Every structure is written in structure tokens, then in C-alpha cells.
Image (cartoon, rainbow over the protein chains, first blue to last red):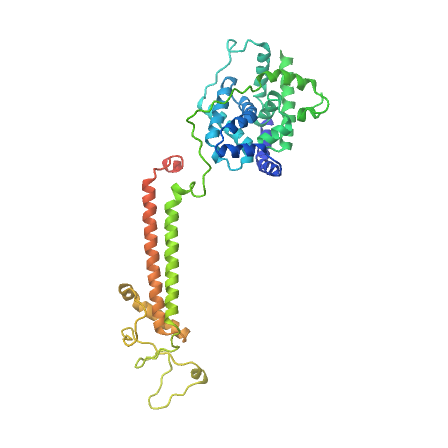
Length: 197
Length: 217
């Protein structure tokens, strides 16, 4: 049921992603200037892009991959992006582009490593707050794709809804729907878990 | 618990304590990006130009297509020049001693009676296929083997055209046919070259296993 809703939302978001980027054409998009500068040979500007978009990539990966893999993968994705930046047609769409690279990389990772590694007590963090956070994150990761990515960006990376929409290229309406539906599901799962304990 | 509040969306309005608690807990997992280490030998490719993206695959085909276009333009120009040089041909090609199958039979003993329509248009008679106009200079050369192969067909078609349009001279029509045959020959040659180049391209390019999966499996 939720999966179906999420899939429909995802399709809706995909269809609406382009108009959302087009709407931004009237505004000044700073990352477009940064991308142009990098393409012109100024590599230092890529560091600024990295600072701006590392949380987005981190959030996208955290919603899909084991936490231990995320940091290295973030670096890999940015290096790949630097190598392939010339293929980016619309310089204003750097965020959606790198988010898509991150999603594809996460899918590749799961394709390569078929076997799942279960966390044992030894592997768990000794820090109780981190342990609690990872438990909640594990619950978020059971939600449909569209919801978990939006929730991670909102709750873990601290972005607001409009920021998520701008960075990912999704429409504000889609992000709002994903946030509220995802939050509703998360509350239900958390209360169920607390009740069962 | 206020699910529909603005706090979840943009952190405005009344804070939701549960969301705040989740933010606080999950915030420990937040991205703390370490400085990006860009290897010195990392090659960044520049933005491709208009031709650079298509050059490796399509450049030979584009060159062949351009050659064909140039050949066609040249032929058209040449034909146009030939027409200009020819000037205005006579409206009638008078040829004697040739029976005209389409003209009405004329009794030698009586004077021919012409209808008013025949007075307006001069009667066009057609030469036999072996009759030559040796006194007229040839205006351009045609390919003899090609003409020999198509002589009968061209002549028959020319006769029909003359019957349809008596203003055209038979010479003009034959020349037109010859030019058309040459054009067709040129197109055939260009087509053969194109096929050859395409075959060569297919042999030189290794087959892409991803694009040819349907052929493999």
C-alpha cells in the first residue's frame, strides 16, 4: 500500500522535477556559477560545491547504504562528478545530477554485495546516543525510498523542506507530501516498537 | 501531536517536541565532510564542442553525406550551365523521310488539308533510332555504353514526350535522358561508396556487448 503510494509519488516527482528546475531559471543559482568556474578550469571552486552538496549526497547514501560505507562513497561520488562534470548539460541542475549519481551508486553497491551483513552487538557503537540514532535510522530505512530519503535529509542533515526541494530538484509539493507521509509512517513504527518493548 | 504544522516543513510555527527529539538524536549522524582530496592526476574533461561528441562515430558518415550533397550540387550546376549554353532551341525538329505514326495519313496525290488546330501547331516528326544529325554539332558528350543500353527506351519515351509536348525538340529530350542516366549513375556510385564506408566502419568498430545483447542472447 505504502510502497504503491511511494512509487506513484516518485513518478510524480520525476515528472515534475524538470519544471522545478526550470522555475529556478529566473533566479540566480550560485551553484551554476560554481559549475561554470570548475568547467573553466578553476578546481578550487569544486571544493565549494563539495561543501554545499556533501550533506545532500551523505543523506541520499545514508538512506540506502550501511553507515560505514557512506563517507568513502561520498568522496568517490564527488571525484566521479568532477571527472564527468562536462557531461552536465544544465549547470543549474548540479544538485539533482549528483543526487542521481549517488542513488545509482547505492544501487550498484547493493547489486554487487548481495549478501547482507547483520549487525552484531560487537559492531554496534558504544555510544548510546549513536546507538539510538542508528536504531531510528534503521527504522527509517524500512520506509519506501521517497520517504526515507526526504526524512533523512530533514531529520539527519537538518535541511528544511524548501532546501530539500531546491537541492534535489523535486517540487515543493512532492517534498511536503513525502515529509508528512513519511513522518506519519515513522511515528507509527516508532510507537509500535516502543509498545512491543 | 501536530503533524500538519509548519515545523516539519520549514521549522516555522510551533515546534513539535517529537520532531525536535528526533532531530537531536539523528543529528549525531549528520554529515561531517572531511576535506575533499582531489588527486593531482585526476583529469577533468572540458566541455565537448559541437563536433567533438559526434566526431568519433559520425564523422565518416557526415563526410560521405557531404560528398554526396556536393556531387549532386555540382551535377545540378553543370546541367543548368548546359541549358544556358544551349540557348533557345528551335520549336520544331524538322526531319524528313520518316513516317510519322501519330500524324494523320497524307495522300500524295492530294493536297493536305489541315485543320485550324494543325495550322497553329507544326507537325512534329520523329527520327528513326539509327538516324543521326551529323550536321549539328554535339553539345555535350554522353556516356556511350549507357546510352546504348538505354537508347531504345529513351527514344520511345522521348517520342511520347514529344507527342505530349510538341514544343520540345527530340534532341533536347535525348540529352535530358542522357543527363538523367548520368545522374543515376553518379548516385549509384555514391551509394556504393557509402555502403563500402559503412561496412568498413562496422568492421573497424568492435561490437558493443551492451548494445548487442539481443544479438548475443
